[in-house]
Length: 318
Image 1 (cartoon, rainbow, N blue to C red):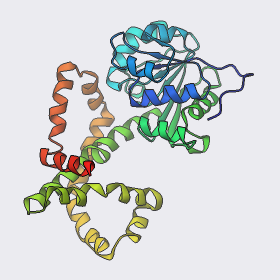
Image 2: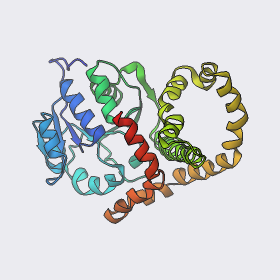
Image 3: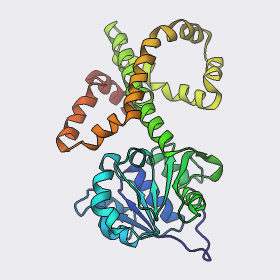
Image 4: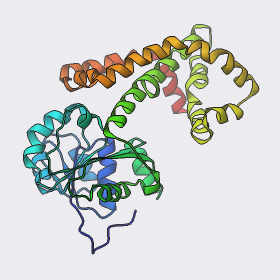
């Protein structure tokens, strides 16, 4: 992406956090000509990585926010309320722009922006590594955008300029609201993309292995080819995908799909949606502590099996 023109006033951006998405945003904005400060805790494990990446200005969260015209909330959502109240809000410039990568903390009230701030959201449709990779290849991911507050009457133009600096072309930005993005994203990842898909793969893997198939073969049948099917769906839609697979796959899909994923599944999905929309899920998320996070790994392990993971590792090694 081209750097800003010298005649323009280039805002200083504080990227708070340096996980996958924060790293991509900090590096892409830096390479697009924005002055970037990375705000991290003094004992953050991300500090050495940011230094290795060539980030020249790494400060405490408070100090980064004090210098910034734009503050990008790039740290885990469940911490937004705590960190915002303690370290961010008291140090904001009066006319700051708050940039969110997800609508969750604003929509569900974990963060209440000051009246004088512009509030925007840019939510890439890709993990941080892909956002960075596409940027380096001069290609664009797509993403949602929303304007939460427009006090300067320039929030939209700021949003488009920052999105371009991050690596999202204007034509690939899709308008939404903080509410729709927050609820849709949480529901999608829980019910389909992550939680639901993981259990579908696990169950299919177990059925094949329990019926005598080798674990590596089972993995290849129920997981390895997913990216090929998803690519067809992204390019041609579900009907277009069916038009491009074998007759046997089409016949089996028509007979089995509606029986396997039936109305009882949709009913349970409705319950998931209601929990997300009501704020009950976010309330539990905001209450997470170190003990709960430590137990999360064990909970997630139930969505896979040791045999499945071993099969995946052996195939990756090949």
